[in-house]
Image (tube, rainbow, N blue to C red):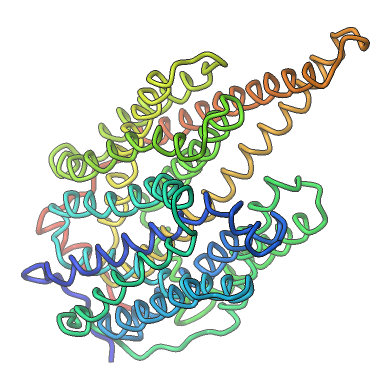
Length: 498
């Protein structure tokens, strides 16, 4: 039975509140372990390449399952999806908290990822049918608070816990919240989205898994082992080929796993491009800034996390405000102003030196996060506003997947640029010195100065990348959200094919 997805007359605020909290916990959990990895290495007597799988494995499972979320949202009721996903996430958290070995810990993390990967698409889809298009900005602004702030405060919270407590507390503190939300969900959650019989194309799942998984792993690994590593080359090549096969298959299937008809809508396609560039810039800043603060300035992980906290708070305050501004002024002016601020602040970060004051670093970083907060949700919401409700599951699935892949690719590219510039700078500086004067202390000073050169150069490239997104915003048009326009969007013939 093919049912039309209709706008709800009244938003289910209790359900949305539960989903917001569950999604916040899931996003927070994603970034908590990064600071704890060195401690876990010591406890389990493993090396960095092994412990990194706690982050890489989580990201891979999420990247693989998010494209399948469109099928899950169509096939199963949102109540059963929420309860199942949160149950799986809670089970994974419990396994990780009590894990006696590293194998158990990584299994728990992957089970967590399997549950959390459904949360964001589920929340976005219920929000899209809960609020009419002309009021989505404010609602999506609150979602932006969850999507951006939770990962941003993760390292600070993790740094404090790891410094004063055991790393298992990172899971133990999440567990009771997950259980409480699960119980409330069983009691209060209702099904508000229609379902219809649909088939899962297993070959599409295989292509999606190899495609997105290969790209995510390959680009993530490239930042640490280099682009010429055989495993990196193999993963990226397999990912590109599989992704091409995935796209071809979706265009030929009567019921595609991911309906690529979404890219026929120009504002959605443009928003996807801008969001991808913005995600790459955002994640690059989250990598380059700690590298500068910790490795160049010698500031502890906890203190560096505290330095980045004001930026997260700024984004948290601005996300709902930006949503309301979007409803009033539209995406173009917000995107243009936001990306201008981001580009200028990013360039100013390229001027950070050995003696730059911490107050100045915090200020410029916070201004950069302020600029980013004005772009992400308005641009994304405007693109989703052009889609009919029946394509919402596919639009949100594609959005989340593109941002994950763009974040991984952006991080890998900027870290590689930093490493390459650092190596060439070390060579240039040492060659200019008298070999007899090169001591271990001199080498350490040269390495520190070279790393600063690499970080500064990477920030310049990031600023240029942001300018590219800025140019794209000039072509953004506000989607008409009047009732007549909405009726026209929804009047597009509903077809199981596309």
